[in-house]
Image: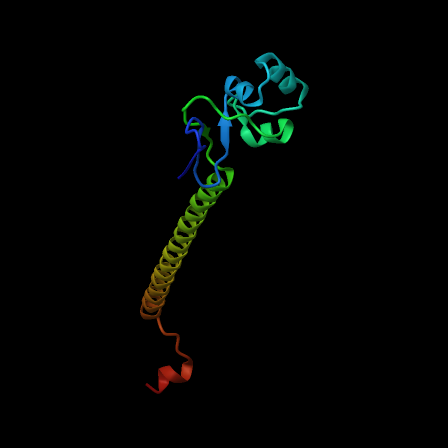
Length: 150
């Protein structure tokens, strides 16, 4: 975590990793030295954008208004979670899910193959049993000469 203080020690902003410094509308109006009504008009007209939480990015303020006035409060500026970090963690979770599913598929294939081998062995045993029973029960058909020359 990086913490920056100006020479007077009255401006403090906290930035962690790729996170962006965000400020409220009131704080932004102080930083750009404009009224809140002017800032709301600029947001409505699209000159300045704010996030879904209603906070303004300080980089956006610098882009539109130039250098910012030093903050007179000692509040820590709210930071948002970087999108890259969220996407990275989501990708890692998805990769774990895919690996788990691959293992499940491998196990199902192994179980299916083992079941198929057992069924084939059972069928072969049944066929052998049926053939041996039918061959011993069947009377042997002999021809005329075999009856005479036993």
